[in-house]
Every structure is written in structure tokens, then in C-alpha cells.
Length: 337
Image (cartoon, rainbow, N blue to C red):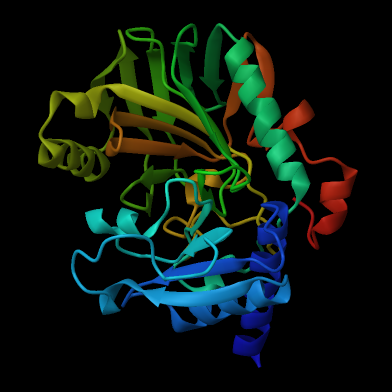
């Protein structure tokens, strides 16, 4: 019974997201899969396309001849949408997708990972407003009651957003996602980041169990202080990466993705720290070092405040103003934040 409910919820979520991507009925659609794709997720994607009137065809990357040229599969019309369920992304996978194709890349590993995802137009609106805020700002300030006090310059910095919407030709959108982020202007990152018990170390996916203080100056992490049980693992991870760039502050991101759950996650909720899309979760703030796409360490703060030019965009883990859901988005969700 539970598996049937999970399948139904996955179909509903996928179909709604495809509608938000303005997928046209009566056109072909392709679902890309590989040997690691969850069969239940594949079935849900095919059924979701069928539900909105798209003619779906599943294509298994493992079944195709090596080096086969051109788009796949052969269709009288190019696909209106490509839904990628690939867990592995070999270089030749790009040959299957027309440069003008819209691609919805599903970040979930299993159909169950879509539990609680409620696609809504409000998320895209909030992400765009957040991006506008970053683009207009001069300085971003991250703080919390545990002593985090980090400032980065925004002038001329690289910025990005993810809203899970593949609405234009050639766009590849990851879903479910909802995040805004900025790199610091070169050399501007300064201050401290305090990891407290219950915060999450990424990409390792484990909880901080003791307080660790990271110090940044001139855009780089210059000191790590805390119990050896925590700091030894962090230093070992950075040494394993083996580059100076692993210590450079690369990104500050704020998550805006609302996932329905019966209640807020406990401080050390089993399975929460390494759950899919944890960095995108509503109100999470991620501070990452490295050289994208290689991540040094990433600190996921669960109760931080983020201010742009001293105007709070996130306060104590809760997005504010235009970044908070309106009444229509709230009504679409079954559980309060």
C-alpha cells in the first residue's frame, strides 16, 4: 500500500513540475535512464508524461551502441522535453540531447525521494526575487547566535540560481531544486563560520557533534579550531583533495525549497543529513570552499541569518520578505514550516 502511495505522489509531483516547465501536449518526450535508475522512478516519469498528453519513450543509455551519433531516439519530431534520470553522466551522454532541447534533470535517486515535494509557481518567483536581491547588493553578511560572522563582497561576483524550471530551449534544469547563491568577490571573504551541533558537514553528509570555528581572511580559510574528533576529519578531507583551491571560499548559498514533512527535523534526525537536496532545504545556508565543481568543505548552517546590505533575507533559518512563501504557496502544502 505504501509503495503505491509513493508511486502516485511521484507521478503527481513529476506531472505538475512538467506543467510548470510548459511542456506541450501532443509532442514527443524522452526519458533517459541507465542501469542504476530506480524502476519505480522510471515508471513514474513515463506515467507523468503520459498524464499531461506527451508521447513518452524510455531510452536506456546502457543499451545504445558506443559512439552512436545523433539524437536519440529517432522521432518524426524532436522531443519537446527530455527527462533525465541518469545516475551516471558519461561524456557521450550529451550526444543524445539536441542543443535546443529542454532537459529536466531529476536529482532524486528513488521515487521515494520525491515524497513531500510540492511543485508550485511560488518557488520560481521567490528564487528570482532572491537573485535580484543578490544582483543589487554590495555585501552579504552571514551570522548566527553561535558566533558566525562572515562577510563577502558582491560587487562583480558570480551569482546563480536553481528553480527546477526548464522553460526555454537549451536549458538544463535540475529538479527538485530551489536555491540562490553567490561567489565572493575575489579576496573579500573575511570572518568566522561556527559549526554547531546539528549543523551538517557537506559533502560528507554527517552532523557536526561539537563546535568547530573556521576563520577566513582575504578570501581563504586560514584556521580550523575545535575538538580533534571533528577537525582531524576536516583536515584529512582537505588534504585528500590536495589543492590550494580547497581552502578558498567559493560560495554562499541560501536554500528556498519547501519539502513537506510532519514536523521540523530533530537535531540529529536519522537520514536527514545525507538526504537528497539537503543544501536546498528551506532556510539552510551553505558556505563552501573549493573550486567548483570540486568542493573542499561545505558548512550547512540550519539556523543562520543572511543579510544583503544589512537587510535580512534569511533570519534564524527562515527566509524573509519576498523570499518567504505567499498564502497561495502555503495553501498548496499540507504541513506548516
